[in-house]
Image: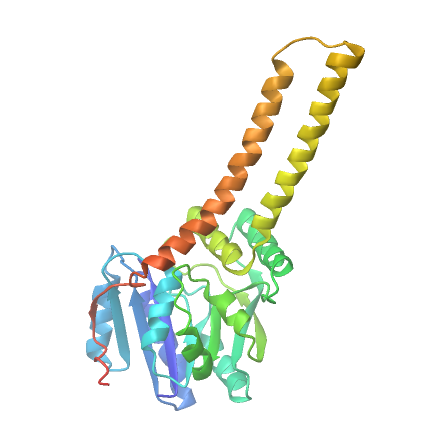
Length: 311
């Protein structure tokens, strides 16, 4: 198998057929063996039924159906686990990332690049808030980690079999695929493109999911939040010590003080807020450690047409 295309799908019934035909038109001229691997991430619409129909018509269409929604990053991981190609393309199912770019990605991969990612020049159909937060997040992540993260790039890319096999050795529960690939450090390059507006339907990627993905990226590749909690703890302790000295001076030296609850309440609330923030940051890291220690399956497959491997 020369090329695999991994496509996470969540409630994309309006886009599946169009995506399939555009993929066929883009890849067939390459005259190579390929597979289209759809990962149904607990869709509540008819996405799975449409994918099954395509699989009956074309043996190059393969699918995994999850028992429930596990999330886009885990769906991509499942596709990488099952992909057979010497090169693997990761492509969302909403048609914002054009399948027509795959031949160009494949050509760059043939030149010896282990990773070729697609970098967005423009992002149509997205709010100013989403564009701004995404832009700030990737630049912040690059600054606070020792890993060079590609900016203005999502998961749309082609990776080699070497990269896929290495990713399969990284079993953490909180997946951040683009960060893992960057962390590996293999030779990579990029192609620029204009990201299109969503073809049909509504995005299942809410702001809550984006925040969760951002937290996964930060906590997986940076301990800066823990350092900030430590530094703020020392800073607040220093301020509290100075306030204590001032209080003792006013009480016993100048005897110029007014008993009251205002300063006491301000101090308690300030110290309490800092403590809660620090505990929350530590809790985020501890919860991730706990999930990995439990070592539960990353995903559960309900149904698939991919034959079991024989060892």
